[in-house]
Image 1 (tube, rainbow, N blue to C red):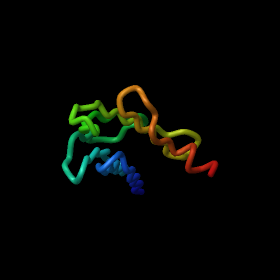
Image 2 (image 1 turned 120 degrees about the vertical axis):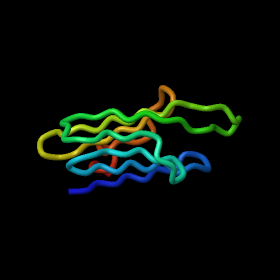
Image 3 (image 1 turned 180 degrees about the vertical axis):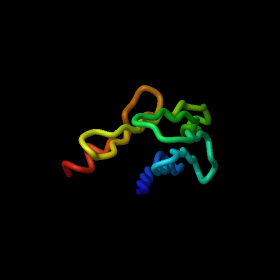
Length: 89
């Protein structure tokens, strides 16, 4: 099993890769965080520059819910992506 989510944020690309044994967060192709091992839930953290050149925190939440993997990506305090939007759309 491998899930990959790719989100554009301004001029940047945020990519989250989830497998049975690890989760990784990439920003513009650079690995920013990784969790190794089997987890039911994971959090990944990183940073991205906004249009003003200031760094904003990235938080990724990955969890298993009713045999489906859900992913939520936040920049700052704002939810920018959730698999629930993708499933309902």
